[in-house]
Each structure stands twice: as C-alpha cells, then as structure tokens.
Length: 226
Image 1 (cartoon, rainbow, N blue to C red):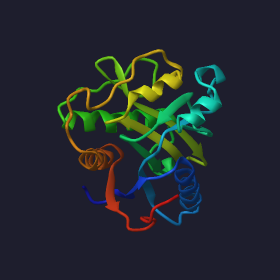
Image 2 (cartoon, helix red, strand yellow):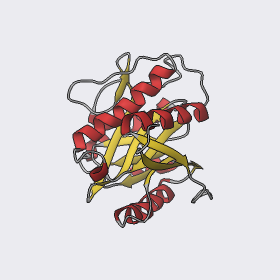
Image 3 (cartoon, rainbow, N blue to C red):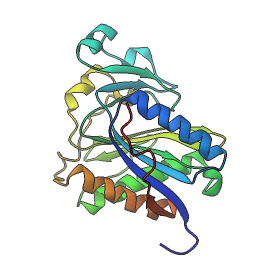
Image 4 (cartoon, helix red, strand yellow):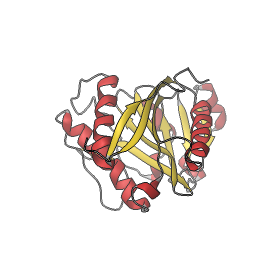
C-alpha cells in the first residue's frame, strides 16, 4: 500500500446476535465521530434475523411475528437505508464504520465503492459479479448475492453489506428481499468453494484497494459479543 494511505482496523466478531452487533457499531460510531479511533471494518455472522430499513414496507414481510418466532427468526427495525432483508448463518456481514469526510462526501460513491469491493472479491474466485441499473447490490447471473444498506451520522457510516456464501435461501421465503421480486443466489451456487475465512480475507484486500486503506487487524473488541 502506498505511503499516506489511511488506516482501517478490521476484526472478525464470529457468530453474534444482531443486537450485539448493533451495540458495538453504535459504540464505535461515537468514538469515530470523536476522532478517538481510525476507520473500522467489522465482520460478523448473525443467527436468523430479518431487518427492516427506513424504507421498509410491512407487506414485504410475508410471515406473522408468531411464525417468525416459531422458526427462530428475530425481527429488527433499523435506521439503515433500504427495505427488508435477511441475515443468517453462512452469510458474511460487513459493517464499515468510516468517516467519509476523509474519503468522499458522496453517499452514492460510497455505495458503488462497497459494490466494487464485492465485485472484485468475487472476481478473485473466478466469479463475474455485476450491478443492475437503478438498484443497489451485487448480482451473479441474474441472482442477487449481496445486499447493501447503510446509515450516515455526521458523514460516519454504519450498517453495510451482506454476502450470501453458504446461506440457507429458504429463509428468504419470509420476505420480499429489498422489496424486489428477483431471485436470490449464493456464492456457492456460482461455483466458489472457498471457505468463509478466505473470502473475508479477500474482502479485506479489496477494501484496501477500493477505499485506499492500509488494513490493520485489531485485537480490540475481539471478545465474543452477546
């Protein structure tokens, strides 16, 4: 990485509840806004969870709360952009906490940047990912493999992306994902046999390329979060 690149600390939180991940994001958000820490990239794998963004429509949840509870699926309202989405095992969720004043004060450019990170990651495993006009996310052969939804507070980002790797797609039957009646896919279906850890490491490398970061693995907050 050329000299002068900004520092971004990254860490893998392992399997953690959505509530735990949200608490940590909010803690790091305040520290980043205060300039107490550099930019951050958190990786996490959530249990079965459905989240509603600021633009979510109730009719895009296709099951009652009782059915979701019996199926072991949590339901959360969030402040991220976008509609309804699903998180679960076998999915790589990334939460960048970045001060865009030090990159570009442009939300659209930031969303395209995250897409580019994931497209380059897929390319490293021989998979051609791409965009769809007028939509946010990453597609492979007409199937959406990555969803993106973010929130900004004083130009500092929270929330982020979810890449379907080994995800059990049957859980998407409970929602209209991102409000789109389009097929959902996984990286495995596209022929990638890499382990989750290898894919995460590749995301880190591509994150450095796209956002011009020096990526540093952080030992802080490595304890499990509830």
